[in-house]
Length: 172
Image 1 (cartoon, one colour):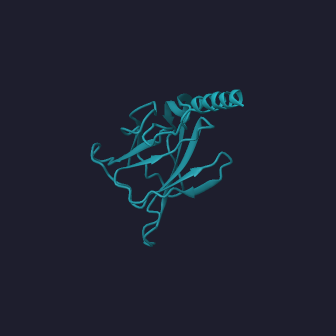
Image 2 (spheres, one colour):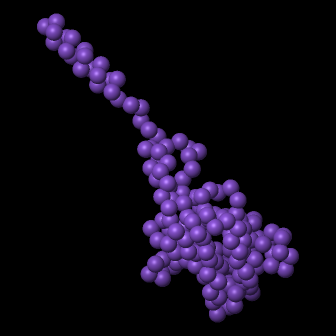
Image 3 (cartoon, rainbow, N blue to C red):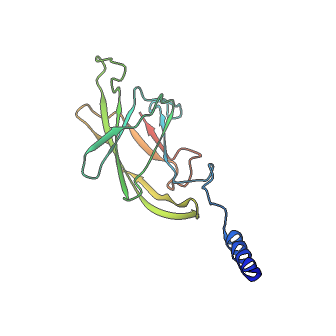
């Protein structure tokens, strides 16, 4: 009986001491970064200019347009995700989207195509991998029937590895 107690105690100790704490991905751990687009006044070149009633919709691979992102009040920049399973992401950017019911100002939509290379980076066992984007390029905007509201696009940072500063400037 005594041997059984020692055996049970030894097995229990090994079991308890062999366990590790649960690995939980910490709140501040960097994950796949979003693309930061900053809007600049085309005429001035340096002054920030918020687009009026901006609406952003991702264009799916099969050319279907997804629901718009909830942006809230856009002041000078937006953060949008890039596809992790593709090397191209297309977006419809619409200004004067009539969200405030002003029919005298027609909506104006441009489509931008963002190309990049995805690179996986191991974060931890709890968080897994994150995707960074390298070699960012953007095709000139495709204007709709309403003309182009985007006058120029410049890439400030070709690699999207964090969310500290703007990656792209859109002049309008």
